[in-house]
Image 1: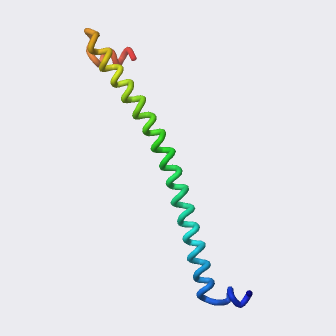
Image 2: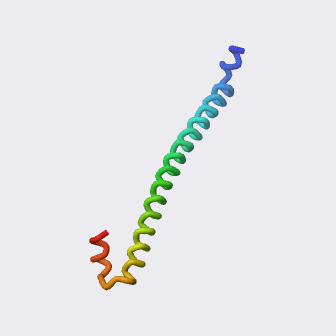
Image 3: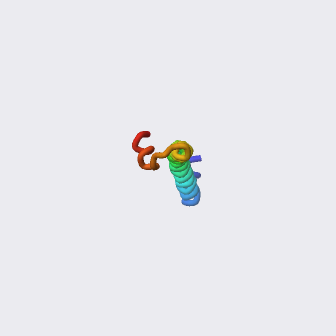
Length: 73
């Protein structure tokens, strides 16, 4: 069994397998971070869209300008 690890091909195969596992782990970690960041960004965009829509609807029935309504909000 020990002579198996003395083979260049086996050591090269183990090195490449370790690099593959490391690469996949890093990609998974980066992907998880990106998903979290995107989810937070989407939530912020939804809130901004709802606030803008509410501001637009309120401005239809008001005599005030949008910048005045925005200052009040």
